Length: 351
Image 1: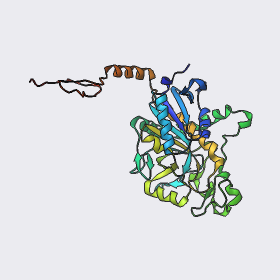
Image 2: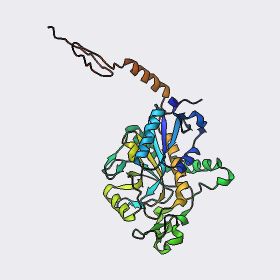
Image 3: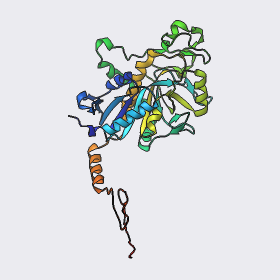
Image 4: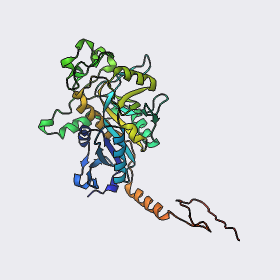
């Protein structure tokens, strides 16, 4: 039976559909009744050498992500790092003139410092860059190139776990369903209406219209590294998207990361399902969740395993050496301290 202290990686899913994709990349899944704390149940399993516990937010938003991270750290005290993995909105293109990169639906964005900003930016407050080991893992994975990500093979293995009814749930929708509308052309129907039924096809750029940089083979998404814009408001304006991108050098928009990175070491991995405009595209959500989960699985292979046993022993040793309250001389209030290091001398005045 797995114990809560054995889990060392916390994996946060903003949406239930993100969680379903993550379940398919587990090398081993543990019984749910063994992964719980105070009647809250989580998904737990093993990915490579890591013991991973997965939680899904009750609602979207920065505060909900922060609450979930806090609860998970309280429930599983040896979590060393968090991954926040799920779908998000991407900017269609970024980079300087002559070196422009195209983001298409199904691509993956990974938080990484770009320009003068640190990986995650809550653009109405501040920015966070994260901690060294996670940053090093991302950089190493990035340096290895796309051949090391193995997303194509992971997607294949994910589909083999599906029953016949869900066999095509995580298929690549293909370039014909990737439609980038002109910046000034707003969605014409309700949020429930698909663009192909209510929007003008003459206002669309397909991948073939965007040049070779937008070409993708099946199950071969590109990986983009850069700043991620995080806010409590969903980004549904192409004009505002372009303004924030220009001002803060961001390549992705989402609603959770800043709530976690303010307190915990975390890397953000997002599968792109729309272009941060009014033309939301639910047809790409499952595939984007799958590509993000597949990349995150590969990233974990770059992070050294954490020995939960040594953490427990170190914690016990530190607790035994902790001095919580001491009184010296006539000081009746005492002092509170922890972990004295080096020589400590106390002198008292004779009266």
